[in-house]
Each structure stands twice: as C-alpha cells, then as structure tokens.
Image (cartoon, rainbow, N blue to C red):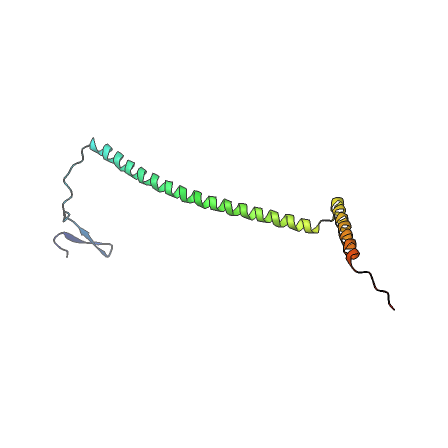
Length: 128
C-alpha cells in the first residue's frame, strides 16, 4: 500500500510510510566557484557588521540620553534635599552670639524710632 513514490513498511506493529524517489523541484544547478565563496561571505559579513554598527550607535545614543536625564534628575533631587536639610537645620539650631548681637541692635533701632514717634505726639492731657 503506497503511492508511486512511497512504500509502506511495518515495524513492530506500527505502520510507517517511507517516501522514496526524487524531489519534485530541481535544485539550482549553479555551482559556486571556490574563489568566489570567500568574497561573498566577506561581503555578507561586512554588510551585517555595518548594519549592526549603525544600530549599535543609535542604541548607544539613546542609552546615553537616558543616563544624562537620570543624572540631571539625581542632581536636582540632591540639590533640593540639601536646601531642605539646610533650611530645617537653620530653623532648629540655637541662636549664636552673633544672632543675639544683631537682635539687640535691631531692638535699639526700634527703641530710637519709637522715641522719635512719641516726641512728635501731642502732650498728654491732664485729667481735670
């Protein structure tokens, strides 16, 4: 049982079809010259390398851009956190001697301004 190109064989109780014959479409009859083969392979490899190099360059540029963006973001975060920490420390640190001296000078200046304002006010009336 089988076609013109096939033979049915029986092995251990199982049927297996084995095809025998020639291929329906003939293979190319062109023979490659052994001296042309290395040149063709070399050209194919060069084209592949050139395509890969271009792709790798674009990938490298995209990766570099992503890294640059990441570095900028980290720099912004570090700068912001330094300012926040410095502000928190300034608000909680005790007054220095210099701070107290500046406050005393401001109080004296305010006192002088208050005295000048009081001199310009009309004198107090005496209760009758």
